[in-house]
Length: 223
Image (cartoon, rainbow, N blue to C red; front, top):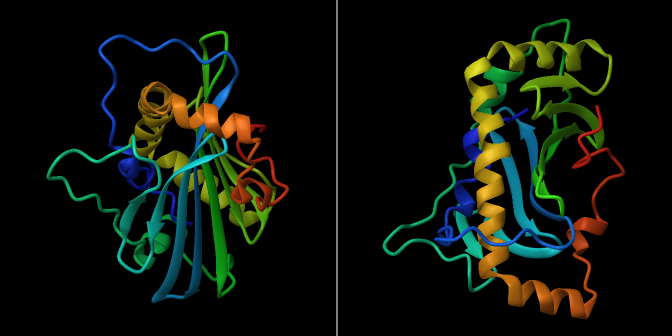
């Protein structure tokens, strides 16, 4: 499973934080990154990636060119910077999730990730990272404890939990991304995108991506 933290938030490097911290939204608001990777075989993968602020789609990834599409006018990239997200390398899967004989992986298979943070009206926040495999819960990251937790009790999930927790520098980086970087970026987006969010609320629009999400515990951080 491709769980490299560096793939999480580079697409969102855009609007700078305002000089004064913006007010906390009156209702909870979530910045969420949805990633689906289809591993057809050891050398062929497809990836879809979309970022949403609440139900408002802000970014998507063109898998053919690995170009970030900015779907709103306010999260613009810095002048002269060409946004790029590296395509998932199948070797990353071998590093995080090797293929020992006792733990075979299906071929092909699909990994799904829902990650981000939620700003709460009381001024606190909650980070989450939930990973699934073939439509089932697989592992989650406890952002408060900085630990990975298997979401099922089979050997493969427990094996991946141990491997991920062994890489504590990556876990520390992910914890910082979820509890600090994501929160700052969400506040920035709320500040610069408040008109778009207001129009979205008036229209009562729900993103199809939200409706299509599998019935997992994703984004709730339930462990």
